[in-house]
Every structure is written in C-alpha cells, then in structure tokens.
Image (cartoon, rainbow, N blue to C red; front, side, top):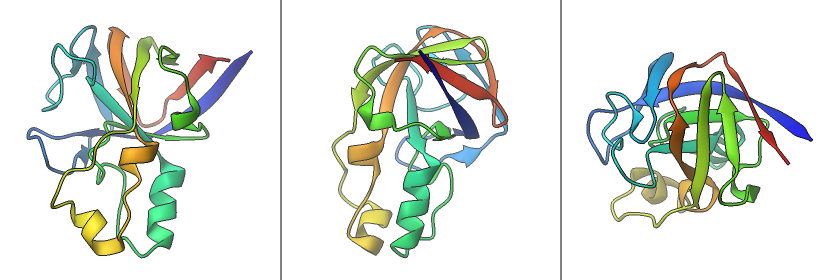
Length: 146
C-alpha cells in the first residue's frame, strides 16, 4: 500500500549548528545530499526531516519556531516520521531517499531546549541518504510503501 505526505518546506544552511532557512526548492544529489547544505556529504545523515505537526506541538509549548529552526532539510505534513523502519524509501518527485536514522542526540546549548525544556528533533526527527537525486520543492507530494 502506498501512503502519501506533503512537503511543507525545503530548508538549507551553509553552516553546521545553525537554523536552516526556507529555500522553496533544492537539488539533491545521490550519495551526497542537498546541494549547498552544510550537512551534505558522504555519510548516513545527508538529509534530515521533521514533521510540521511536531513544530506545531512546540509552538503550543511556547516556542517561537518555524520550518528550518530545528535544522531539518525537509519539513513534512501527514507522515509519522519516527514510526518508519530504517531502510524505508521515501519518494519526493523524482528523488528517492532511504531512512538511515531515527532521532539524534541533542547538543548542549540548544536554544529551543533552553526556552521550552523540550526539543522534538532528538525523538521525532529522522535522517536519510539520497539514493536518487533531483529537484524538490515546498509544494511537492511524497510517498512511501507500507
């Protein structure tokens, strides 16, 4: 069975450890990640994803956050990202991603953690590597098989 989800925002940053800025569109390269993004490279966390529902949850806790503020490359809607098994393939347009990691260790000095006492990226964010490159936009629909 095929499930669909929406891409809400595509986000890029030139430096590590900083919030990403919505770009509208981006080019992803197989085995590399998002062109122009600090986290791209030959490793298992080439692209990061976080659901808009999780950003909205943090807003409800008093955080003034928007897509890209958790340093995620792709902000989605309509998909429970941390429930996906490692190895799940996500398709966005002609791009294909493979889920490689669920969550991450939170770093010290996280402004969101200090502001609210909680951060969703360590538990709800996921990481993927790019199997097939191409362009994605904030208006794309993605899909995956369950």
